[in-house]
Length: 124
Image (cartoon, rainbow, N blue to C red; front, side, top):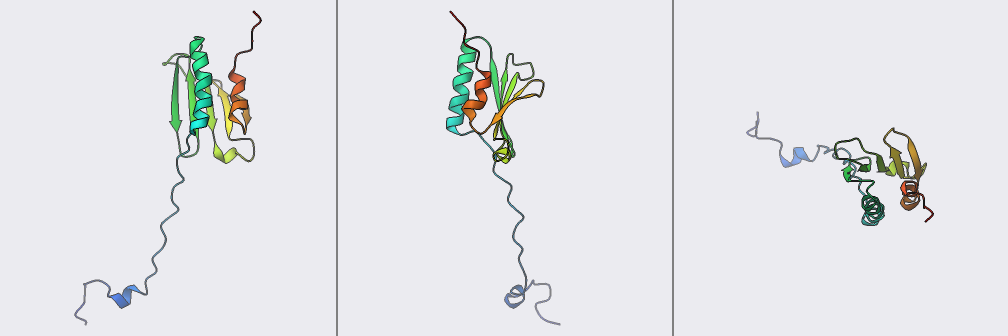
């Protein structure tokens, strides 16, 4: 028996141990950038001024960011503007989804995608 019984591994014993790397770090949270929020809030402000929309919610998840638009705070969202970076190469990272779940428009440029929510111009 040795004197070091139960004292833990010595310096020469620890050298033979393999220390595994930690598991993959979780991906960072997806969020809208400042320029994207500027485009979204410009549309939102115009629609609030017109009396069409009244409330919004932001939801940042690990896989996507969601901007929800409400007519009243107690309802389900009228529209959701979603940013999903996993779809950026295939269908486009941005999508506008109606309350029914129907995808109104999807693409790579946010301004073009949310143009579907712009009201049609009226003749005066």
